[in-house]
Amino acid sequence: MNIQLRTQKIPVGISQCAVGDPVRFNGGHKHSKVCTQLLAQCFELHPYCPEVAIGLGVPRPPIHLIVSDRLRAVGRDDGTLDVTDALEEYADRIAPEVQHLRGFILMQKSPSCGLRTTPHFKADGPDALGHGAGLFAARLRERFPHLPLEEVGRLNASDIRENFLTRVFAYDAWHRYVAPDPRPARVIEFYTAYKYLLMAHHQQMTRELGQFAANTRAMEPQQFAYEVRGRIMEILAHPASRKERTNALMHIQGHLKAFLSNEERSELAQLIEDYRLGLKPLSAALTMLRHYLPRSPHHFIHSQVLLAAEPAEMGLCEFR
Ligand code: SF4
Image (cartoon, rainbow, N blue to C red; front, side):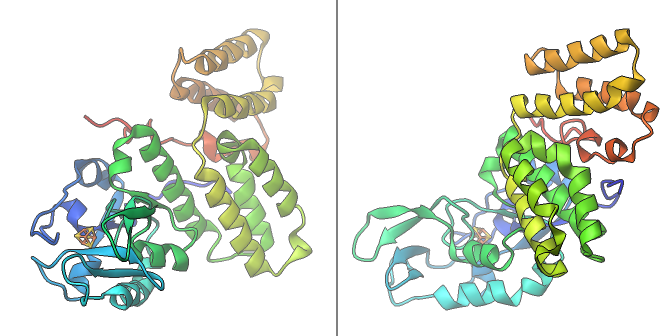
């Protein structure tokens, strides 16, 4: 399985105020240029505003989340306004559309869209008991537990942006390569192609996934595919470290070394070491590995997604 990035843009949902539409409670927006100018180069952005969609209008009375019998979305100034059910029902209603999305970018701190930064207030006072998800985002996560989600503000950081891109690319690839034919053999092929990229994110979890995947008869094929996809997305959610990436590069180097001269071997080893020390970018090591790749007759190594164009090489990680 040689997994290619899709040539058309990947469909990704986004909180509507982040694309610059004036849908906030006060008639404003929270335009994110990182989303509309940078990420829109490879994402087809589908905007959603849950609060407008449930009929609150613009401008509208602000709502916030209170911890009551359960988490409730109520009017900040008018406690009789309760849109808890409406927000959750909206997320359920658009689920068939979300099925076709490969990621969702959510506005931080919002009682509807926030993913982990929304204040959850005491029912009887102004103090926040903690922070968590807004009601729309929580329902989205519940219905689509493997869908890559991220907050708009966090995407300003290049490492978080890179991680989100990697997750969206993987989720999209799964839907193109495995979802139409989720036989265990296909699932294993997909895992195999992702193996070294996964190792760059979390070695131990990748090893555990390898052991799990070796026992394909332990469960029903659909359940097996679901479990493997969940584990892949969980591993990719860990940030890739320089140390673990170096380790993955060295594994690939190990597969190629039989086809290299002594001089080529030491040049490649030096380049990987320079990457480990932060003296050379990842792209330098990847470019050299790709250069030597055609010498190997082994499909396993040719199929490695780690060797495909990474987000930084696509110019999607730097934005000024
Ligand atoms: S955060 Fe969500 S609900 Fe609030 S304005 Fe933006 S899209 Fe609408």
